[in-house]
Length: 84
Length: 413
Image (cartoon, rainbow over all chains, first blue to last red; front, side, top):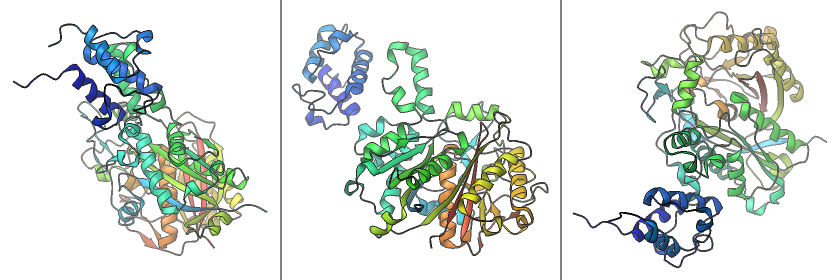
């Protein structure tokens, strides 16, 4: 059976798909707006997609803090239930 | 002195081909672009046919995949047509004063697919899940905005929404703005992508569509006795309008001159045309007057004629009333017999066909005109394109809501 993808890999794939960026740009330190060219609509859309994909809820005040790719991965790892 | 407005580029993506060369090649040869709907499963639908744009990756018109993904299909079609139009014009917008370059590109309906998809999301997943891009993707003016962003056009920008007269009004208003010194160049036209479940069912339930499902290519038959409705098509058409001296200064090739534009309203019924066509006639008369042309000087009319019983008849009556005794001499064709009805893009696609006809000195035909309706007594060009001396052509567009627009275009001299 194929290895299940890690949260980090899945997050990265979603960012590549939605922002149309190269996978190598999506490093843990990359900032969505400054480094990956996201605008305010993209960030809302991405958070929604993460909520749906990982079945987590990200309150608006938390979403504002998720500025880097690594912030998102950490947030999801901390809040996701019954993964793996 | 009145500023003259010429066309220096055009682009189109239609069921008859994905650029204007392919469109002309198809239409001059009397080929239909209509077929069975492939975009979605039509089980349970009355109408199973449409004119679809096929065999093109519309995302290629965008700088990156993200921009393409954030555009509804109608905006993707518009961008594709705009790219062709600007390329053909040879205009380097980056070298222009951006405040003197405008965009007026409309749509009859806008992003219907986006609305449909997001309504499904709303019902299935609730209000917290609808996309933040839904509104910007579906609004009818966003194509005009996106094209301005792509090319950096900071001049006049809006869109007219007059159903099936949309593109003609957009082009006419652009013509007026350039004449009035508001801009030197305007990309004008229309786009439509309503071949989606809501569009097909909605028009079918109005009893507006042809149900000739077994013979898709014979379904659109304007002025034929056995016409039974229009064929829903998608597509986009955009022209580059430019002030004459501006075009000359950069040695642009001039494809024709817009010389007249007339508008009127039926004020009669929300969807049915004014029964005697007198208001549509007024748009034609007004366009002729603006052009300084008599009916005898019109060498070709590209009719709005969509293949509905009432619409074609009313237009024929209107043409008869405007052209009088000359009606028997002025060739009329309905290219929607081949393209189907591109709604908000139709007026631009048909103006482009008029320009191509002027260039080729060839009148594209009305196909499927097997038994001309005697009530639509006009000088038809059935089945095959006809060579003719063409100097001035008229293009008519009439939309639900009773909106009428006529454009008059001349070979440049």
